[in-house]
Image (cartoon, rainbow, N blue to C red; front, side, top):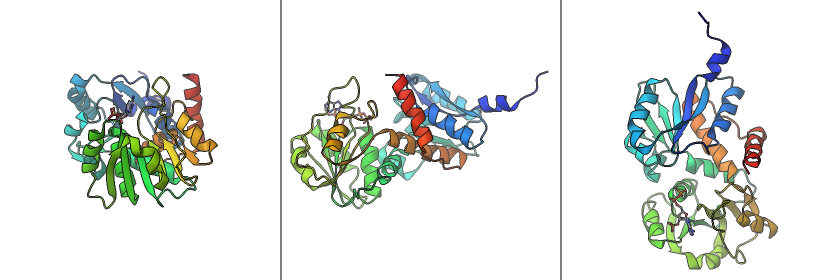
Length: 290
Ligand code: ATR
């Protein structure tokens, strides 16, 4: 008979990330680092689940003693119907990125993306709330960011998207948060930047392998904060040109780390740090996969 060792405990999956495919996820790096750092038992594992097997596989995870899991493409909307309750953010955004398994066996769906975004930009010196927030894009990431900005007290949010109707649909969902949220034509963005204290790209434009995001930043105040959700490359063309003209910039890796902090807290009741160590771990991994 073999006895259980401390090393075995380290390997028992206690949390994970579900997606299809899932090999690209960097969440295991982050959460396994924090599990070790916090002295907690168990590991965080990637779990590939095809869309048609979602319900069955989620039920299986419930039986396995997981504390919870992250949810990524393509399950963020479908998981919505499978959880027993949702937090305010998940309900408002219409997507769940984190599921916590409660002690009574029920599932609580959370969305930590908006909070993660705000925490990331709040670590800067720039006062991003003095003017408007110009948000580029109207997909799932934009929904989380608009929600986060409104909850954090942005005075006015302007949303610009290639497909304007999608921006209009998005803003219609965020009219009751005490912030003015409007959709404006993409062609007005370069002019509207003049009132912005925050400019954020929420699209995949500028990511390695995707078309570039071509923006004229001439009208943007040098006091505005510029940020991008793209983190491959770490310094996108948008961040580079903003930095070179004197704007403070924040890259997308911080949002990834900060949204993970809130998930970790929900599962293990420990708030981990967005330390230099965890960031360096990710930067090294990004370099390796270039
Ligand atoms: P996510 O959930 O990551 O936000 P998504 O819902 O597919 O992904 O949204 C992608 C966003 O990037 C959208 O705002 C999309 O614009 P459309 O709504 O017009 O499709 C934007 N996007 C993607 N490729 C683009 C391109 N080549 N030019 C302009 N916008 C693009």
